[in-house]
Length: 287
Image (cartoon, rainbow, N blue to C red; front, side):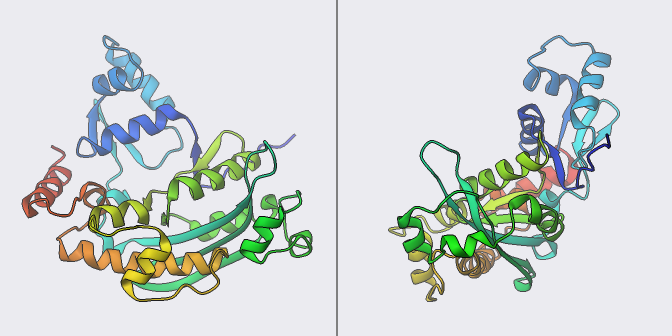
């Protein structure tokens, strides 16, 4: 027997770990052991030694966190606190198929790496789902069973995908759907693990930046910004369109004084400018 080597950008898929991360993100990047024991472990009167051990066990192997005496904190190099212009983003799209009552399986994955508003790399592959395609999906995407028969399995591309994603912030249009599918497939290859990358959803961003638009689907937003989507319903085509949209949204965030991911998550169009500044101050001083 040999130990499975876990890629560095995978972490435990524990919901408690995510709860701890969300708690810190909502509290300026830092929280006491007591607060975490109470909020995450539901232990309101836990002794500090017990709380410290539980937290240390929980965050093992997760580079997003650091322990600071009696507090847990987000790593100072966390993308949550880094200027947006310095972050590398991977904008992705997946095409998937669902057969009867089985969970959806990915049939294509496309992605583009962005930095400072420029595309610097790309990733595209078909994936053999080992199930036949329904006619509707074949007609919608133009992907055929014959094309997929010769495509690699997800387990055969997972390492190259994780290498491509690296530490980048993942971006997708309706990211809950795409990243849930990706992590489900990754969990089949590495049981109990998921990607640790921070994420942003362009649907969510667009709704908060442009609340008065009639629709926020990819077609409506492409039309709003005046570009066409080539190869619609193919992963690379939709990922490229999402990347173009995301560049536009980043420009809008910049005009509103939004400087990092934490501010981008909190931003609402129409809020006073000092709100964003206040969040930055809290993050900088751990308030």
